[in-house]
Length: 232
Image 1 (cartoon, rainbow, N blue to C red):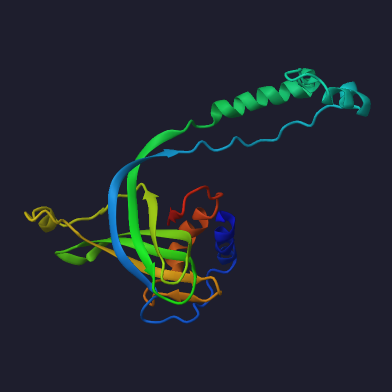
Image 2 (cartoon, one colour):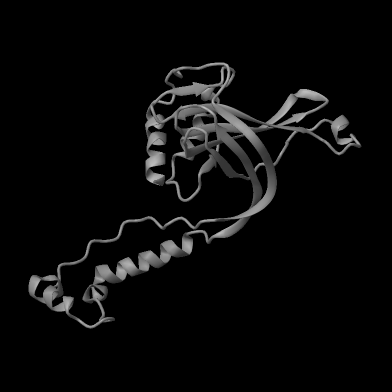
């Protein structure tokens, strides 16, 4: 199912600058609630990459000996490991593993939003952002944008969660920091773009895809695991 959901993302990677079809004032996605929390996430260790030397042609690799080894007892040593190429491959593997960073926990922020598909079409892809606005200077705003591969049927709800190293706000005015009410910024979630299963697209009029083009390419530059959303 995850592969099916990410397939449209790959298609969009080829031609993301297409003109949105059926753009309108309001979207079919209703934001029910949202919040952010501090969290810690373990960064997965990337798989070591490299070229393994081709195995040498030895007697044990010929048909007769290979058929004999099929019936060899469990744990029997592979004769290829004793060749020069086999030993070189083992050394190269150890070197790569020693250079690969180990998995470690990273402190960051979890952004959550619960949405409701109030329209008649199945939603497959969502671009959304979490905004932090300085109440004394609305022009001062921090935006955390995310891309999600989802499958939301009509009249269904789904909670989306994304991880980011960036916190709520990078710039807060002195006046807001001195605000004794404790509300240093206003929070808001905005839907920027919606892609449907039938190929149609809705996009917010004052949102420009070009602003996130590079971060979008980076988000699709590595295989997706179990995550539903990625930061832009």
